[in-house]
Length: 284
Image (cartoon, rainbow, N blue to C red; front, side, top):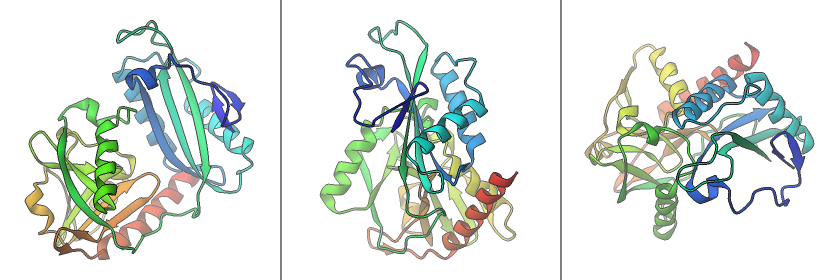
């Protein structure tokens, strides 16, 4: 079952029309998050990022679109799929209503909530081999639009095809300054000694929720320094660890980039702290 504007439909239902602006122009935003037994991981952060993104895209935010309203709609969708006691992946898509060409006929919006069952209720470290490569055919723009979770992800799609064709688990994307920005599906962190580094939003990386949480965790750890600075491709092979973050996997260590093999010592410790932070957010 999916939730379209508050009503539950079969996932096979013909809900969207050929005039859908998300389909035609990528005129849409989305959020993905975890829900475990009715507790939405970092829900306030996701909600406020969504509201800020809608304002930036000049979408009309309905008066009913409160934190509590959307949370209730998510839980209604989960209940409709009988997954109340499960770990669930949630995706909320917001799109401007049908009509117009590039210029819309209206700034009013519709929403679609989809859910799917997950294996684990907690973030886990995957120790399997995870090799990445740079994707340099196209570049991420250094602007605020690049920091939003819009449905305009054709660069990520083409990079994913490149990764599949060449046997890589993921690719790292670069911006117009040729600095490393992020992975296909999440933010990038680099560890060298006791320094943890991630690209700044000004370089065009996604304004990730787990990115923010990992930065908070590192800043609270004695003996570690958190830097938000541009990452040159030359730094990658000099790093001790590389890892990717997003709201579904949590932390994904990178095991290999070109000839360099990486450990995951610090990232293993961070995933425990991330799980603890998620539990604290649920009980607060």
